[in-house]
Image (cartoon, rainbow, N blue to C red; front, side, top):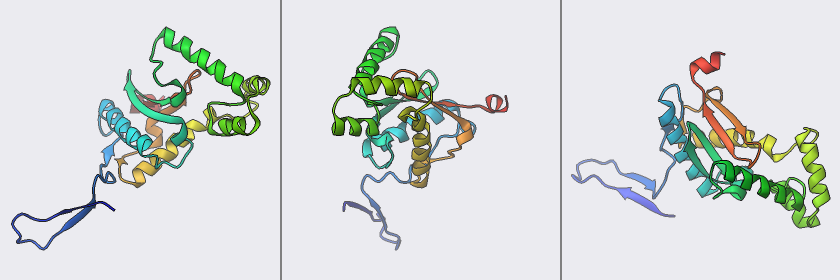
Length: 196
């Protein structure tokens, strides 16, 4: 194990501190848009989520599906790995729709870990993918998209437990997924919005 040991320069103190090199368990970045500004809360949340996604310590299905978080237009976007690099705008939305359709023709809920596992076991199944798509869009079947906001909440709970973030309150954030592309979007809520 890598450790960093700090000794006082004067040598007069008996205090010696030891900390794992590169340790990040004490960042305590405030992500409350009410106690700090929404811009700072978003910036801190993006830092924490990117650290979590790169370190793969989250232990939820978010680990395998999402690989980067970024702040855009006053929101945090956690981007699905199958849609990284497509950008924003009309052409990006068109590209995401085409990629989503191709994933659907691969098999049922192909963008989720369970779907990928099913496809590896049973092979490609375009008909099953289309039936699954209809069932998911009519809310007859639970899909990964329904669980992603819950996984984000679990991730933030774990980040707070590891003292990477602080001031995490569920009622201060709106968490949802995009219709196409399965990105997770976190929007900070102000007191005025919360009261409505």
